[in-house]
Length: 134
View 1 (tube, one colour):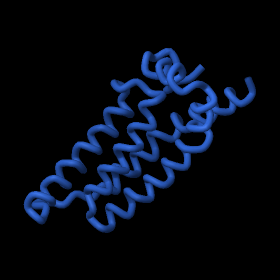
View 2 (spheres, rainbow, N blue to C red; view 1 turned 60 degrees about the horizontal axis):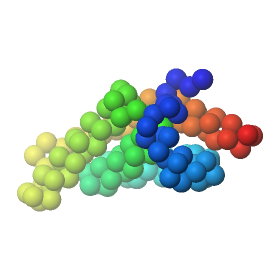
View 3 (tube, rainbow, N blue to C red; view 1 turned 180 degrees about the vertical axis):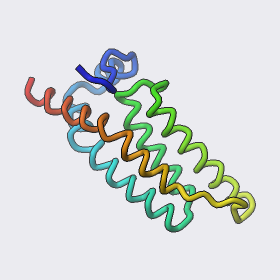
View 4 (spheres, one colour; view 1 turned 90 degrees about the horizontal axis):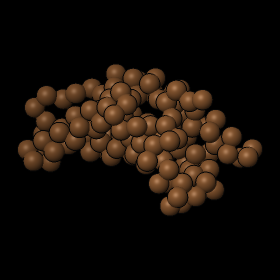
């Protein structure tokens, strides 16, 4: 049983039908944990550089990875979507104006992202282990 993953969702079932369990296994075991680490580092660097576009892109990728397994209306996905939207707005403002009126430090958002995705990531890894043992 999973608290975060919805393996009965239409999206997940469509994923199984389109790419198969073997490919999902590769995604689950290899890519998602690696991507999360890579993209959280990109967010950290984006925060340091005030590169809101880099933050937005990294958060978007994390959201996309999670949406393979978590319903789009889950509070985790809603938080990540909000994070992405706020970074997008600043990236757009900076692109349009050349500057941002009110800089935002996304460090607390990054820390919350790490915290709230910890358990879902453990479940994704567990699912991968279960697939390997089938």
